[in-house]
Length: 637
Image (cartoon, rainbow, N blue to C red; front, side, top):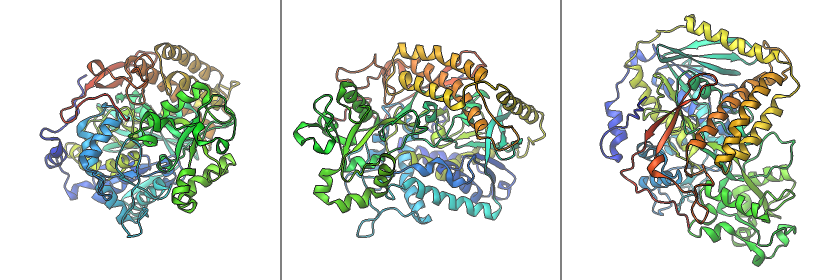
């Protein structure tokens, strides 16, 4: 299979404009004849559904939460990037483009990333028009702060609640279309499968989570905006409901899955405190603007952080990376944190933690200023740990947070399956092997507000509306298949809970396919995952019934998909014999312990094709071409 990214010809700066000028259009009178199914109501899904309905298309939107505004986008804290150069500090579209390409360790398409940088400013204008309460300076101008991997201040923010405020803006736009009758919103509805007819995506199989009924919904195009799969690790910063089911089900119907091993570990999370935990809590990267990260110089120093003198502290990020200091990219910072903890200099009861200290900033700016900037984050931290970060340094440690891998899409955001569009974190397109902070919100809104509404019209203009309805034989077959799978899950009646097996899978992946990977460890994981999957289907227990609200059954279906997907994730990590971004193979590193790429053999996107149950997936490669940036070894020193 040859992968065609459909990147327009011409100079990088004009590719998107050229693409838009060449797209086919659907006339206003015909738009209402086309139905588009949007799965997911986070920033990408809500903005896409609202924009498509505003254009005149008929839209049905699905989410498994009880409200569209409960999507996990609401948990994003720190901010959203845009190349507006309000600080007059040298920012530009090109600089944002280059920082993003470099931050991803040169494993993303130039054209996609440049388009994202171009659109970034329009996103801020859109959100301000919606009333999103971005922070402002005394003058009234929008405020900015810095995030990792950049030497300019380009991040717009709303205290530590940026994702929440942006999602409320998108939710308002979506609600307006629901009220107008342009969008039908299905809450408490989970996608279980993708309907493909004659090689084109024509619908989805959905379970009503309240009554348990399984139904097919059909349309002329399907948009997946279902987020990432970091919960494969069991403990992550993601909401407990986040899963891989929609994109994995699409993959099993023929959609290629790209770079599944590219998973991001966030350096500033509250450390694990015990086996009782079901998730981890993020502490925003924005804290690294004013907080300094350090550990004791001496191993095993058990004194409280505030009692350790300055000359006995190692500010290791500032020492190793003086140009970027505490704002080094997430993958680099996370590995450095792990390194000092592995040396025996970690803090806290488990030794798996480092300090994030605001005492210097409070001395320089005043306690009130720091509290005003980060007050809600400090309150969250104190509520969880019982410690006040204004009085004693925070303790942080890396945790799974975001996934750069996802469904393969072309420049139009369409999968290799015609009619299947994938946006936001659910696709692979913009972040390469490592996402820079404050870029996830940027991508989600760019895809939903400014890219998909153009490109999906080009596809629809070439198709006839309403060709498949819910009584199609393929719809009936997949409804029966989904119901049969649910019935099988409920019939096992074993001895282990879903969470128990998920926790074992997460530990296995964290140890062998987490912050660092090795050939031996990955082979071990590939041996144990099938055994654990067999255990699941033999010994899991799920109480309750299918035709009722049954959260244990919901979790079981998602974990069953994780148990399949995780094998692909480890296989991809094993095949990519290089280190790049967050994918760190211990066999491939520089003398100083940094990621060592192999551009000769791995300058490509790895796109995997599902070949059947218990069959080895087939690897396809999309070569990456770089004509506007020079491939260099990343250096943040």
